[in-house]
Image (cartoon, rainbow, N blue to C red; front, side):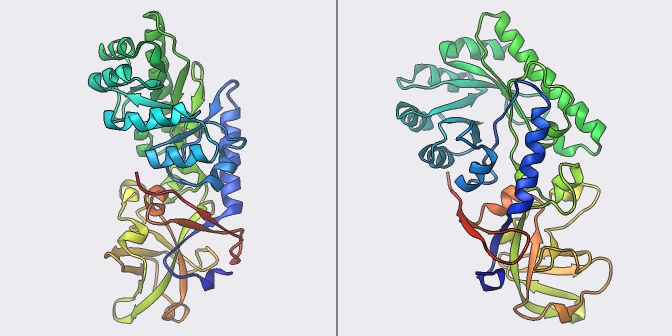
Length: 369
């Protein structure tokens, strides 16, 4: 089977690029003795990818109960469910733990912590720490931090943070600064809890940029990162990987040509590509994706998906005129995404290539919650 044989839109994953991206992160984390890489599988959602990213059923991170079940059934026992948990979901986690899983949840809310502490099943939790993103978590100096730990008691497993604001960084120096703020904040939280008499086994941090650019991991036990596996147009501009190191693309077909406006229409629109505009605030705005040729090369010039409807994507070239002779009705292209996590979410499998057009494998994904 070849890319030309697939129904479109389809999700294409280049194995060689994936392996290179995984190796880059593994090497970066290995610079810090004693620190474990706990890959976040929320982007990949695939056991086949996990086998490469976390060999020997190593520790992983998940973001949904569906992922937790899927990976547990695939042999991955040591997990962190890295989204604040609603108390109604605790039964599901406890049931998996009773069957041999070691799924840890996170908490930043007093009522949720009380529900975890009172639950009759086997549960443990990390207190989520906010080091500047302003999403979930409590500040390292907050009075709520030791209160949550006290409520959890023996179910306290550690502390966890995520420097999602690193995505706004624009230089290696800025990334390194954010990474140090992340490290110092979560380590300070751990120190405060230890001073209060709590055992803090896990000190967990991570985002793909801070994992790669962090200069020190002193006091940290593990690093979490996920999008580095596939890469995307935003991560490329953050320096996580190079221009030719985006492993994930969407295979699309030309369904119409509009010479009067120098455009073509693809059968891949908002649902197939996502409407994420994360590069809009980056140095280079790639609209809804960069259009590559069937071999994944930028031979079409700076061709971008500039407009999307539910099932339509409109492509225009930004640095000249589209060569419509190369884009006949039914012609195939590949679109590199702004945000791999959201683009992949609409698909149930990957069509795996290895530098060419031959599909060497089909790997499944777990979707839903």
